[in-house]
Length: 363
Image (tube, rainbow, N blue to C red; front, side):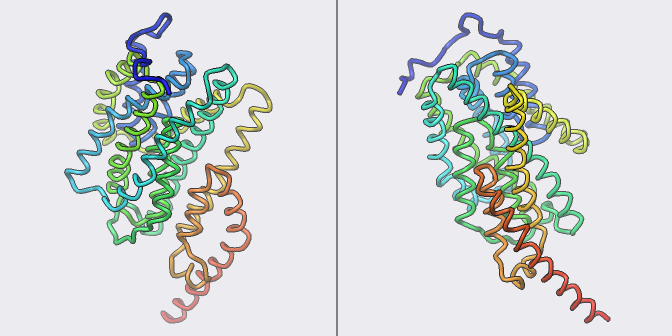
């Protein structure tokens, strides 16, 4: 393990100027303020692709930047009571050690040219997951509104301990390895597990649980000597005013404009990291299928009423968790195939039967 003395404390030879790094931090903070997520998914690839910074240093420095931004938003939500503390406790139970473990796993890749190539591929994969998560969040919100079950409408919910703990485990590990996931991935999985939870509580819970996750990941990266204080400090200088302005703009900017723009930026960054050849394109498309199909299944499963699931003899939470949480690790694809082939038809038949009975009773 590298000592704390290995932290880079200044701009090394050829290091990007502070103003350009601060500008990148400002744009990332703007994205967080406007869209509520996407800061790490934008800043980390920008540091790698635009400035040629070592991916490990980019990840670690962006984690420091996130650690400076997230407590502010989390404190606001905590003061307004829009935080589910039972969910926070379950998310951080394994999320915090997993975040440190992700930093350790990143350090094991080494600093060779091949290792940097592998890390760029990992970052591209994380961006595809983040992009799919954004699309899923928008689709889920829209379809829930059409069914009169918008997340913005407060409703009772039951804490699901095991799936929630697993969400924290997966999100923490991704944050520790890539700096991506504390916002874009976890908030979507919370929507899938708790569709009736109000949107402000979803965001507030996500921001509060992200603070210890990011802190653990940052500590790990610092202990392994990956934090460059010149890069991290420059990002913080730009990101804090960017997040403040973005929050002010978010009340005026139409979501239909903000989300597609953010998705386009994520896709571009992800493909730029993944595609170095025709085989890279094949991998990129395969990853999209690997992640997108399970997330579609998880969203679709959420939209069916619990009564229909019970009538069909299946447990909705189990299938939503299997597809949503398993999407980034390949398990979700198998679960989605089984869901589409066997489970969904049974639930759909149960729903049609319930509708027919209701129509008969009304007639």
